[in-house]
Length: 190
Length: 444
Image (tube, rainbow over all chains, first blue to last red; front, side, top):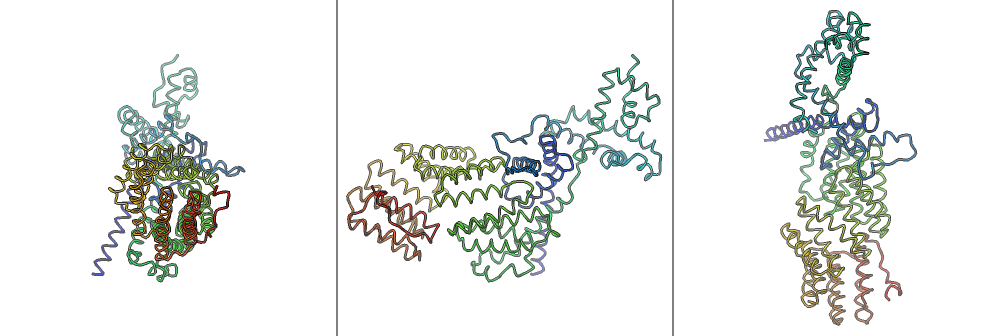
């Protein structure tokens, strides 16, 4: 009996873990880009600092998710408070909350468009082959140079640059096609 | 002008100008041609997008792991604490969780804080034990195991629950100390959140009980605004409700009614029976005091209906009490007295001596208005008995005895009952509060 109940308990823990992982993926994918863009565009915070603020906002949320009734306004309000606190770190005045009738972080059309663009590009990149994805990722996201990528692949930098151009052209073509047809679906995530 | 440059060449130029054969000619064309320049700008914008982590769906692995581990810990804590689910509070105290390393997890801290939150109203002493255990364990958790932000959040939460329990026990000075500790933890976070909202609310509650209405209102305004900003509508409404109660206590019935009506509309829109019932009761009470008796009846009858459906027995008794006041105002005095007598009996049956006493004092006031002073001593003696049986040997007994004596000696008056009712409502939260007779000018 004890073995059986231990197995049930272990199963419950594993289920809880899986369910939380899924919830996190969904919430993070839906809101992290928006929060980052709010911090950067609405408050002028550099990308690196914005990343850290989004990380902190999510950590606090995940520490006690049951405290939050409505995730979207909570996260937007929290990034607004975090951005203001960040900007005021050295100021003498320490205002805890974003006050005023309209929250400074309220996403406007331009910001939402920019989030939609990021999400559309994410879907675009997912449609590329693995070689293109890896090459673009290393060059653009990781910031590796063409010669460095070439060396790891035992080829020439010129070949990598041509490959990058080819892959980016493919991506742009898919992106243009998706923007015309599928942007509305993507916007529903926001 | 020469023909347009192909997208492929512009793309290569954007990557590295050395990839095009005649770079000077390409640059000269780009200077003159708006279309090709626009193409170049679009490609560069796309390149910028590719450098954005959001476009790659970069996942924060630390957060993903933390989220999964937290959920697993919650399930584990539920198992660990299952033995205390229906056990008496003494079993929990004897178990001395903070002395056992098995319980040193964030999940246990969260579970204890949650349990303390649930118990604060029902059994604040137990809630205090739970919160103390949560604090003790939270202090032992290390930043090697958990993110610092999470530790501050959990410690803040545990101190906040301790503050709530102390508040319910009427230990206000200690409440404020615990609130300070909670706030100190929350201030370590990179942003203000729900914890700060709650801390402001508890501070305001203490000030409200101490009748520092102006400062309480100021804090409640901040708490309400901050809650609204975070989309925490329930907390916003709770702050608004207390602001309404302050207006009611200050006899600013119109202002109170306006706020209660706002919350009622929210409850109706969101179909939240508890808010609807609660606000119908408070709004109905305001209308009784404003002399708008039809509106009062409409709201109080709705409150009765809602509380009956919810099976909130104590709130049904409270609503009957308000209905009795309405009947008295309508001139149906005998029925009012019968109804209020029933409320006093109900509160005694529910072992709520303070409410029974306040209702009884109000009933005594009605009897006095009707010239039935001889019934008052017996009524108050019954309430004193309820208090004694409940073991509540506070200044409330002195206050009731004083009122009973006043009825016998012919000094009974409405200002005196108001003074005693006010004292009774405070002493329940502040058992150490001594009763002092009202100054002569208050009795005029």
